[in-house]
Image (cartoon, rainbow, N blue to C red; front, side):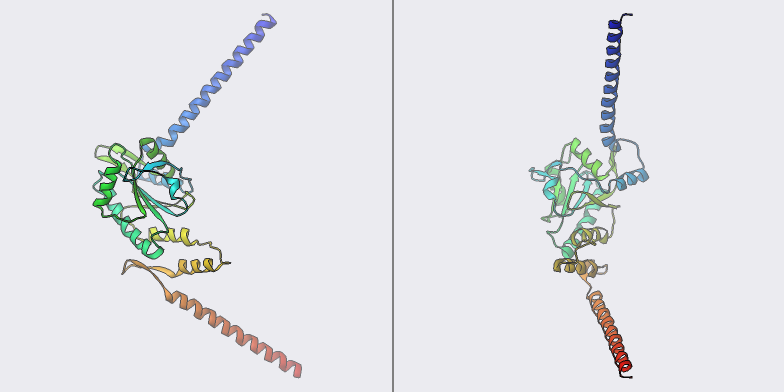
Length: 285
């Protein structure tokens, strides 16, 4: 074999290696994309579904495009700057979806009373893309008597729903009776990251309100400002009254804090005064 033939053979072999690597990379990319939507289609049980859901905490939710109940385009990025509550339903569901929305409605009303109606947003998204049109979402909201200004009902295409489900850690699959899915409500922070997951269809209002308090008032708030001090007081002194099913400002906690500081101040004053007297007596002696 001549040197020229050997050189050509080497080039052909090198090109074959590059082609094989290119195919592997492309296949890996396809498999990676498939893995992003795989949870919606694979066989799963409640334990794996909840594990997938918990793993989504901290995920950045993409600024996906939806249509509201009037058919107007909205993006998830439009709701940044405030905490967002998100739950996915399919409108033909006659059991869990309706119960979850009704329980969530009760909790949202209590949260509005405690925190203010303009402090957070609620999104209900229909994941049955063939049927959950803007008109169906509007009818669904009306049938549940939900007329809150900060609660939006959204629709989207299948690719968008799958991306949202992946970001939120929400698993669902088609079944003979409609869909099987995790009973999940997600709370997203003001920057669009998943903060908390709430499970089941009969949760206690504090399961919704307490995470919102964390995000709105901040457990690590700035105490160097007046507003920071006020927010910390609101955070710890706003408590849930199960009897009245509402949050109230617990003045008892606030009064206890004031009395505690007064007692410490009194004890400190007595100790300082006694110390001064003892020092004076010692000098005179």
